[in-house]
Length: 205
Image 1: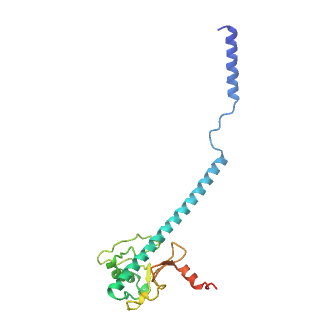
Image 2 (image 1 turned 90 degrees about the horizontal axis):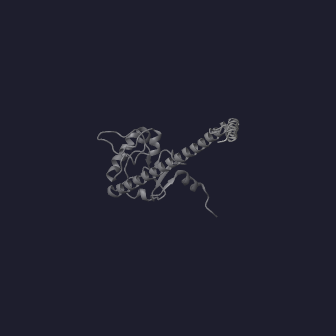
Image 3 (image 1 turned 90 degrees about the vertical axis):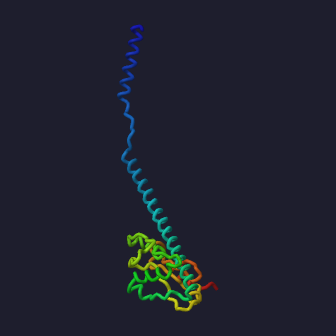
């Protein structure tokens, strides 16, 4: 290489090095505003996800509660058909001795497949921070609660079937929906608020 070529190459390298030193460094990190935006977006997504999860959980508990009412309805209907009367369990026990009330209904309906799980509202159990129990050991008393109450029909075998819109069983709390759930004499599950609305709404003219 000639001396002129070497001098030209050295000058070109020096100019390039000087240009690289004066160039700004690449910005690979996040700015404070970008980080704030990301945190806000994450917070919004988290709040929406939690709300959706709670809604699904409440819906699942409501479906379980409706299934419990249908199980109680079917067992009570079978009891009336076999025994010729509605289980005569004093309603006063609801306040005086809730555990005994639940236990007596369990004894009356257990021959027809009812367990303590069907007498336990899943939403009410969660509120009490208790676990649903499917069986009761010999001599063991159920928890001291009443999640479902029954209409105290008379001894006549046809009494429960005389009024199709008369509730057979109703849950005592409405923690998983807009109102308490009930099951009517026709086997239909409804919310208490819906029944009240139908009773108070004047018929169309």
